[in-house]
Length: 141
Image (cartoon, one colour):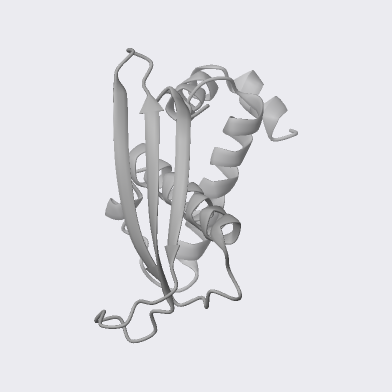
């Protein structure tokens, strides 16, 4: 079940091992993923996603490509939380190890909230802001 979006009823992938003529110099195979999702309001959404990869067909079949696509969206979801909840794009920390250290701290905060506080990350952040005892318990202080 996809959080907040309903459940995926159908997911199909089609691989194309011959992608000659594309303007991607390292394209080894293309793929098409179809998803049909029933949303929580009862409506149905149908998506078709096209992609190209440099991974040769003998090294990645349907299962591996789907795994890689899902992993990519997990990373994108984390970046979205960092961008929206922590307004990371407007951070003024730009030199040395500062940006990497702040990204690591934000990732830690997100992981702790997701692991221990029910609901969304913004809701967990508000909860910890107003419940400092819970925050201290969470960080082990």
